[in-house]
Length: 413
Image 1: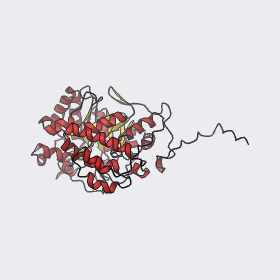
Image 2: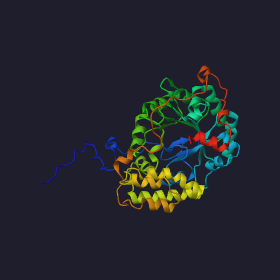
Image 3: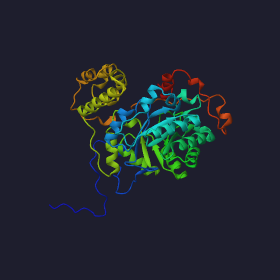
Image 4: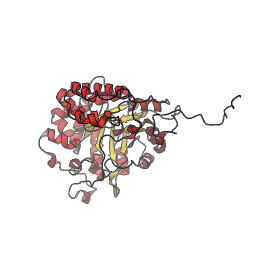
């Protein structure tokens, strides 16, 4: 019996996707020309995907992994102007790069305009291609001193810092990253967008949660769309990109010019290869099986050891071991050994009992890695809200002391 001819007016059959969550099962692939490169000054970023700056995460070893997988732009962890200008060893190391990292991107943190300007100028002189500024950090040690998410509460102070950073950056594009606000009663992101545009920022990124929400609940993608509608500069959306298809949904729902990927890539740097595929209109490859994951994990460990030295590199690798193995059968048992590893050989011995042929577990696609937890009250300096029209930099004397402790305070360590 001859089969019926396909109706030429019917939509094309959906692709067979078995490594996808239910929420993304019917997301259509990107059409030719549907998405454009992200434009930041003279930079053209494709795919329009940015590795989020994350403290203790986006050092050069991890950035190099993500770049090789296909990330369009890969931003360093937050670097303080104080530590950088004082020549702090750790700060300078975290801000460092390699000639193969192009474009090179650094996220700055600072609250004193003159210091921020000097830092931006120095980084540009060292060969940086893109600068970002952190105005979204919710860490209590930062906000209680008037930094991070506390700064957009005062638009004139925000403007003074952004203006100084743009001036120091010169021809290099400078972007800023913010949250929705302190909490639902104090929303600041639309004012921040206006300031960014007026002061010459190349784009603004929005983590669509308030500082109070930390990393709980769901990101408010509608806020990203509202910011996009209110400014003419590019808008980058951040929040809940766990799978490559999430990025397409965010781009379509909000009209944002690019997406920022944070926790979704922890222990999954190949997510950027999947993102590059879907923005090109291709079906992404399946995630690696456990043997493939261990190979990536080992490569990552070697890069960390080469960059920081084996002792410090393997201390950092312990959290990564938990993220890479999350969801695999038996991983909770071997994790007790993984959190104590001191060498790569010990790491490999710890995972030896696991089955390397086990496929990547589907539930692990959206499993939370990294920061999570409930909401908490945001700590602000005493009297901070009494003069929201002021532009005086905050007093960060509470963070004075040893530079290493200061850097740990900023990273939440």
